[in-house]
Image (cartoon, rainbow, N blue to C red; front, side):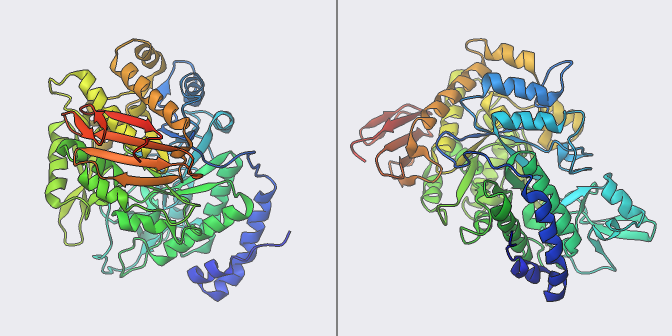
Length: 549
């Protein structure tokens, strides 16, 4: 069949001469995948869609591969509530709990097989991680680089001499460059995130083609969502900030065009833990980049609302939070395998309000991770804490029912906003800080990454009144209500109403205008009146087709 033209993208990245050599190779790659990709009968999103974020070995059972245990658990407890699974990197890895990939084309045998992944895909829509900014220093690609072997000797970004890199935006305090002894001598390799996560060099078109082949392989294995991890840092140019460069956006546009060509059911989700306005840039013009972007400002703003007993900042921000087209929406979340990012809230919350979040995290048993600034100073980058404990002091004497009500009300805000909700496993099942994991690993992010026993989790879920049972039951009720109303379609109408500082009020309207849902959330410890409705302290109510609205 006739090929689409990708010339404009390749010229923008590599110039006319290299583009002319690369495009036939790209077309041949797409032809190899085109007939192997099966399109699902239905790929549209609706109010019934919610995604669970989980590790492949999140629940474990003796004598069973973890992906098989996850399927067993999901079939029993998630069907009818959760439509999609984001199984965090399940490839062979060497560090960062999966985000240092050794082999992009394999499933970690400690977790299971591609057949296990595809069986999960038969029950749930699947999101796979595209960890395409960097690869493991212990993977075969980089080991071949160290041996100076083709083609991998040109796959990784190296730096000669000592250029001025002071403008480079850093997400970590670790060194930006790492020296490696290779067969060709010592080479200085760009390592944005750690010495074990070596950055790929997209100035080389062979790297782009390789990673497109990887992503299309994921689609063949059933991925309906591709999460572009740390995409903002993909392209580097000496003398620039090396974040959000035009070439990075061009690569996202190229991936979008490729998927539209041969896998139009696949949605791109960009993961960019950056200030909100920068994050929105990955929607492109609403038609040419990501269909969904992580709504990174939401977690700190919701947390601030409850700690301050004041939802006015959240309301003002949400009222201005528009999507550029009916092809796009937000991926809303409050918690994830990482911490609660602070950069997305800068410019929305004041420095004093951000300092209050940091102080609260430390007081509630959490940790703070820092980033390196261009002037050599460090600043808080991420709050590492379980979201339940961020909202309620684990060492306090507050009644557990009050803590659960506060937590479920926060989750209600997540579920009522326009977009696709992403729910972290530990949020759905009422987990607390795992400080033992931090102590054992030395990693702050371990505080929210505890792996659970299938049998123990099941026992607590079947114990009336247990924390896990209360949270799971409350969440299940919210998800069932959400799924029953077309007003909660990810792209249906949304209006933020002013009903006092203590109330976060969202009016959702179905796309045909025939159904409305008014959702009221009390972020204070006192009963609030919102118009004609009485909202209990730290509680929420959803009102179907309210007459006054």
